[in-house]
Image 1 (tube, rainbow, N blue to C red):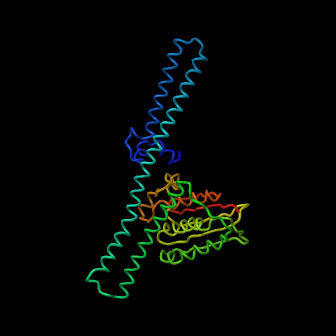
Image 2: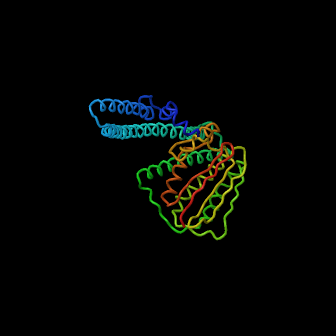
Image 3: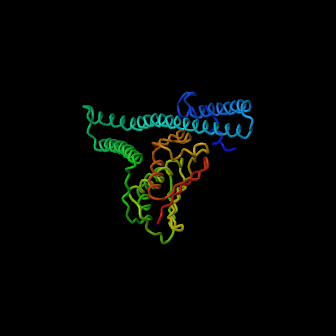
Length: 313
């Protein structure tokens, strides 16, 4: 039996995930309602057999009442689940933003106080180092704000795609070049295998760049200790398929269903202390979906992950 299925049956763990008490937990409420439906159906049957002689009518009455109760319990449980999910996402949002902003803000405060202090000795090399710290941390905060703005636009349904004909191979080459120094510093080699005669695609290049950028960035970050990141690009029927494979930490089976959710970060990623907001894959999926494509992945724990996405030609 799959671990993810067993995880769904573990009501206590599901309640902990939502951060609510047992009596506010959708799975527990559904179980209680299920027991109530069973007892109500049994009670209806025994009462019906005492007052109705025709067993077919009794069976129909029991089925109708059971169906009504089941629909009501399902609707109530879904409402509670949505509320619990909103509560969980709000808590995660506050936690992620606080955690992600604390470090760059602390570094900025430290660098500014040092530069503006009376004890600061003018040193060209040191000045450049401190200004580099300022620039890097400002960039980190701007990236977080940009991701949050995109998420906000996606949820409001106002993320507009400005499509035009794009040389997708050239776009990937540009992204690989951008990550060259980060890859070298991480002891990771990026290999690109484009097929011949790759056609152009009609997409929003700025939005799709975010997707490719996120996938390459993740592949490098999660390949702990160095390795190879391989990228393929090929035409499959009327689709253009992008594929990226890393030799990273992989994704646990029980976490796979959450991987495209907002703010979700797998337990093994947190253990490896890889920086991230948990927004990149959520944004990537929405952009690919809005572009008329599909995105998916395959992963094996401690062996690596392969992400794919298709775009219509």
